[in-house]
Image (spheres, rainbow, N blue to C red):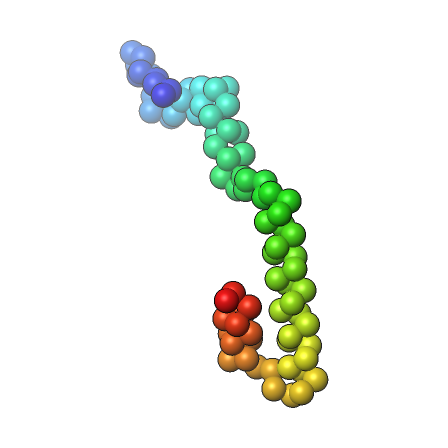
Length: 84
């Protein structure tokens, strides 16, 4: 944890500036920003399963579109059927 104590006759602006500089030099912000959007790497099996699931859904959607029966409700039903 970074702490900065006010010196004698130091203005609040200079205290904030000094604190900001210390935070930047410590690298805390860089580390947090890097972790913020980090997504763990998925296993090869999991990626393959997701890809096959997408292919199956795409086939079913195309089939429903050709029959003229595709809408939002049909999409929910397709996804529900695929998860089983």
